[in-house]
Image (cartoon, rainbow, N blue to C red):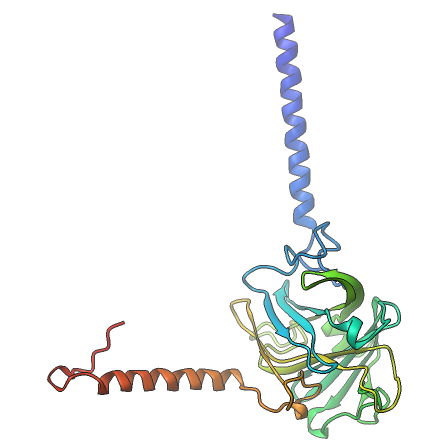
Length: 305
């Protein structure tokens, strides 16, 4: 009888121990954020660096592939809204070809985006943001260095300080990484970037506007040989942050199909509203065609779905 009691007690203690361990594991997993801006896939959650799961997977993750065009493109862009911020991953799988010898500590990413009525440029190197610049969109395109990178000393730009209200509200964070990814097993450059965005009806809740706006990213190792475009654009698109938590990205391309570095470089990109109009027009044509092809005796206008 005593032995049975002891066995039951030990079994109960073991059960309690397993319960506590499982509860602790669940609590620990809940404390790990989905995204951490560290320049890698799943570095913070113990997952695989060559898998999109879990950091860059899910129904709200936007994913856009940019093919290699000369030295430009060769990347996959990811974006997701989460906890009041927009998180971005730039997986530059072609960097070993476009930027031979480029590593995480000696390479940079320039993220260009618009918040009307201004353009912004965030210069990321290593695991920190080196500069945030602002200029009026109406001032026209910014000048470039001989290697194709943005000229950070262009007088059109105003360099913002850490205490600037825009910087404080945006809570910018960025990091450059080097390693494999879901899109290439070879070591290459990656970068992540984040900023706050506005909740509709609450203009001071974040910095970035959910309305359609142009974004681009380019990378390099600094100013190189004049005329040699070794700091190419790797992604570009018109972003729209939707109220349902999804993000729409429409690729913005230049004349040769390469990602556009600035809005003025875009050869043709349909705005989201234009796509809606196009689809509406196609539906109307389909309905009209269906009506016209009905036999005269049964031309009731009814189209079966």
